[in-house]
Length: 288
Image (tube, rainbow, N blue to C red; front, side, top):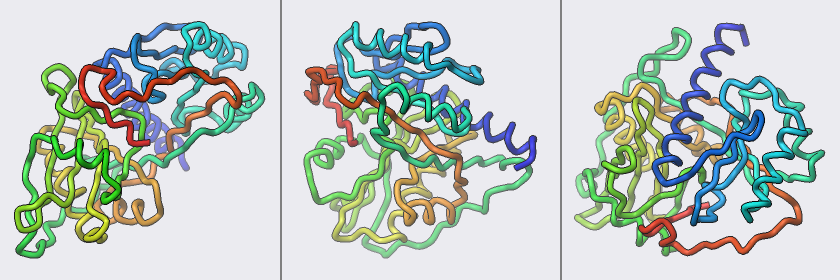
């Protein structure tokens, strides 16, 4: 990969990092700088996605000692020691440092990004409008169906798991959200949510009924979400690529692979983590 491509790739990843910071801040997450790391924590919620240590923006390297200081602070505020970071922004030895500190990989997910204006001179293919069967339609919705999705085993859900899905949240208070609902003969069968901060959109979650799930229907939902984000003026849309089939669908639309987000957590440390789905004042679906 040439230097120009590396530079542009890092710019994309920094924008994703900034989006997550804004999204978490809007949910009440507080940031405390401890040396070269930021300790992100919510004053009342212990959701893993809202409580973590992460390298400060624009740092090229963070020593084990600095990471340990952040983890010690997490223990002091009775949060599980946990580190989030985006691969591609730090060299491979950074992961070894985390393992040497007694952390383990809790989860990792590939990142996919769609850039309407192109990446390093390469433009995405035009968004296609493949005709859906006549009984299907996609409309903008209030997003209340997520309450059903979160408590049902009937849906296949794709999510990065780094931004909680808040049901019934006020978009004027927490950036902007767009929910698109897929219906079959008038009944809900799928839904996708976009979380928008400035000119970056996160395809936060996509759910589709397992009985009718096909690559074509998933593609239709994702394409509708990308088009909605572009219409809102977004110049970057990112999404999870949890499985190879997910990544193939995303690539066909025009998404590109951009490393991933990794979470390391302590092996033995435990806290009384609360998983109440109303700890933020609204029902919260932590879909990981």
